[in-house]
Image 1 (spheres, rainbow, N blue to C red):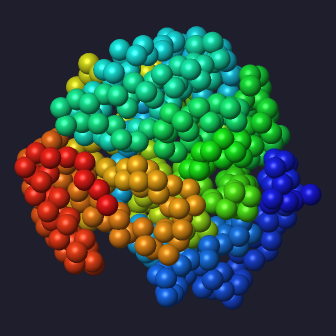
Image 2: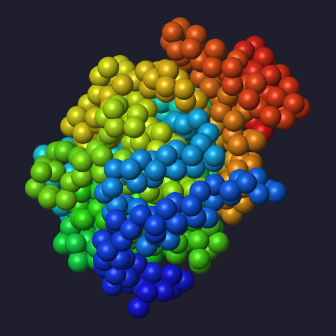
Image 3: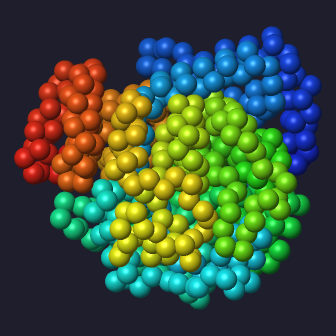
Amino acid sequence: MYNVKSLNADEFINHEEILETLEYAEQNKHNKALIEEILEKARPKKTGRGVECAGLSHREASVLLACDLPEMTEKIYDLAREIKQAFYGDRIVMFAPLYLSNYCVNKCVYCPYHMQNKEIPRKKLTQDEVRDEVIALQDMGHKRLAIESGEDPVNNPIEYILECINTIYSIKHKNGAIRRVNVNIAATTVENYRKLKEAGIGTYILFQETYHRESYEVLHPAGPKHNYAYHTEAMDRAMEGGIDDVGLGVLFGLDKYRYEFAGLLMHAEHLEAVHGVGPHTISVPRLRRASDIDPTVFDNGIDDETFAKIVACIRIAVPYTGMIISTRESEECRAKVIGLGVSQISGGSRTSVGGYAGYSSEERPHDTEQFDVSDQRTLDEVVKWLMDMGYIPSFCTACYREGRTGDRFMALCKVGQIQNCCHPNALLTLQEYLQDYASPETRKVGEAMIDREIQNVPDPKRREKALEYLDKIRNGERDFRF
């Protein structure tokens, strides 16, 4: 039986409820009156507190996703853009992945790290190597990392992850510093989540891969990850352990996308119902080629247009969540979905263990890559590309460091007030990047953008303070925030 407040995975991600949802969506995909009603419900509304959005249920959003009427699809895209602008403006948060180890005891059939893969060399970074990787990332200009590791209790125990986090935060190289470490590791215990919280992590990220239980168990034939319930209920344990920012995601291409979409939104609804705060982020990776992995053997791949529609519908359904897209996607695809809802992207990414230190910006090792990188541009190229399109690259980590996480972040975000902090903070961190890392051409474009955008800070006192901070950054000081 479906129960959004249950802590049982089969009840809050209920198979029968998803099937009924998909049937309902199929029956109503051409119901223009209903679709217009759903769009109107989701539209941003001005209130005495600011701008608010109602969001959508998984059933309502599934109707939008199923709709194949061109004129209604354009309305869906227009609303997604409106919502994205209302809550995130033109800011795009920048991050990079850092792969710590590819040792893994699971047999996931879609991941090259599976224990039976003999094609890739196994590698685990020492703390000295972690330091080298972090310095290389700092020298690129990154301030926010997402650490990744295979699941192996012998080679990658929680103590190793905690030691790496401590090493990352301890490194100050020139003007560089990693100010937020997000963690993408296997489902674990409440006790271990408490340890991660105490280590000062930002968001705990765990991709479900697929919400279809039968497919999940086939795709994960052996290893700890085979346990569907333990994996699916991980976010509840993380929140019980004190982690208030969690990130969801599925790997599109493993199962039918409409099923995954409904399950993903049901998971978001569950977190909101039980913990009072939905997912801080939602990621939308697609299956990609990798060592020993041929994505063409999976018959559930989705084209770029369907992918864009998924992004738009997630943005409408869960208006306050951050949406993440990685370098799995091409430059053209990323350009489209950024406008439809994506608010965080990676830049200059390497998906190899030890992929940054010792390599030029044009070089990249391939022997331990988790997946093929489609967008292989440098961080500087991505930053300039964003600005050329009118977006503000942000290296901001202020909310995490000021304690604006979980329900405190959402309380501000849900009325649009978070922009009073985010817009000037984005400009301050962009100025840091321009001063310390940007090419002359990127710096020229960025300086013009900052001069223009600083005038859009509505509060005169905050604008004056931001101008003061910008001058201090240009004179060598660092790390100012609102």
